[in-house]
Amino acid sequence: MNGLNINQKRLLQSIKESSAIGATPNGGLHRLALTIDDQQMRNLLINWFEEEGLSIRVDDFGNMYGRREGKHPHQMPVVIGSHLDTQPCGGRFDGVLGVLAALEVVRSLNEANVQTDRPIEIINFTNEEGARFEPPMLGSGGVCGVFEKDFIYSRQDKDGIKFRDALSDIGYKGLEENRLQKAEYFIELHIEQGPILEEEQLEIGVVEGIQGISWISVTVEGEMNHAGPTPMENRKDAVVAAAKMIESIDKLAQEYEGLKTTVGQLNVYPNVPNVISGKVEFIVDIRHEDDEQRERALEVMKQQLSTISGLCDVELTFHTSWENDSVTFSEKVIETISKCAGNRNLSTKRMFSGPGHDAKYMAEIAKTGMIFVPSHRGISHNEEEFTRDNDLVNGANLLLDVVCQLSGAKIPKTI
Image (tube, rainbow, N blue to C red):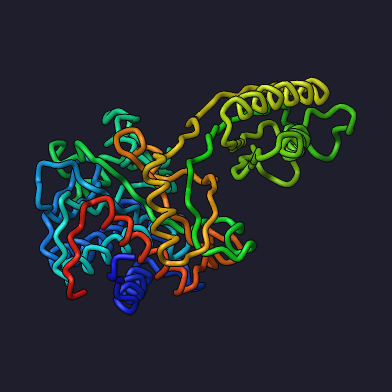
């Protein structure tokens, strides 16, 4: 422990102010990327950056940076942050904690007149959620070379608005030269978004890596027909076939330890009560920390769906719409987080992340690690998402310690 602590009241007040921008009636947030609410939150973050005397820049993907200079400006920085966009009717802490705790770390360093060898940069990534523009993590993916600029700019929301135009509309289309070029370390504080830490009564998750993810787009085509006169044995019902497929996908997760399968999006055509469905489209989200296990499960799933399509006399097509292999974080960063947590007598668990995060792509260009704090009942992407104040503060204090360690902080003896 370095003797420094964040200001608990100030951190919680910052989260409270964020929670008012895009607030939903049930206590959550609806703050999609590159909307007016996102613009308002970004403007507030700019004001906070200015209050701390940070050097501010915005890149051509809308990623925002606040830089605190170090004793050696030419050394690669320690980068901390996350994202401020949310899911529709999402929670108040997902992503937000990572950005505002990073801000609180810098505020605390400034208050204590702490000098660091390395520069420290706070970052707010654009469109991490992917709720408005698919796929997720476009901002971090652009910076880290995962996605081409033309691909990102051409993404469209459900209303046909392109990413490029939405970025310009809110005034956050910056310059390519402002992109993060180099980083020595990237640390992301985040809520767990799962139940493990709370169930095991642990305070901190030391994240070892992120599971691999595949999104498989499935189309089932049957034959539309009248619901009244068509005999059951003569039907080619796409909904019935899709239901059997989804059931098999759910059961597949029982055959592979650690596998997670989800069908969260379903489109039915023509979607009227008295017509036998002619077509169903759905997306399978399949995850595992072992890429080989995930690939094997995918092949089994495709075989099972093909068998069902034959039995139901329907046509089946599928393709991979998005895929990311698993990533393992820097052992040095993992050990630093573990040691700093021990110094604060915080109970820990090493774990893999189920959700994807900006840290996944940042691991391509920097030594990366993540800190998890408990999520009440494991609920996230939901207005009921909640993390206790004490857990928020524990995470922010641990982030402060890790940043001090990795940036070469010189703590005044009067602290």
